[in-house]
Length: 198
Image (cartoon, rainbow, N blue to C red; front, top):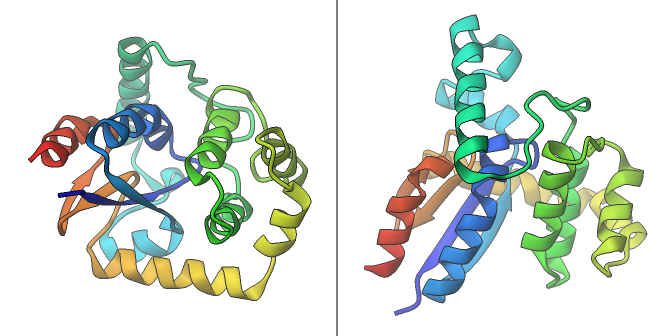
């Protein structure tokens, strides 16, 4: 039976970036259906005990950097440890991804382009012009997607997605939900793969 994965993620999460392509390969191999939910962790953290990066203790900052270096070396993926434009306001990127989703276009391609732009290409993914260019580069109509992203209906849709994530006890990015079971973090992808094969 075909598995469905609900993926809750952030376009400015290095962990989402590091796991994106591996997860795509797993989902394709398993023939899984994936729903993409670019939610607002700025709203999820306060109700789940999480803290924005700038508010975390120095010990956590230090260990985060160690882990990023480890995973960069382990995976051999281009990764800028301290991007010039990070943190960036990801709201427009998320809203554009929802517009892509609504139009039945390639959400994983768009979202990965944004993640790669942030973490490997030193681009400002909070800049609408950058996002339009990324969409155009995928053969999409970037300006039309941006216009839709700025609509109240898209903003309301993201808020509904936020509430759905909170109801599922999602607290960090990326989170994969399969048959009601949560898997948090790109370092849990081995377990995601097992679940998809079960």
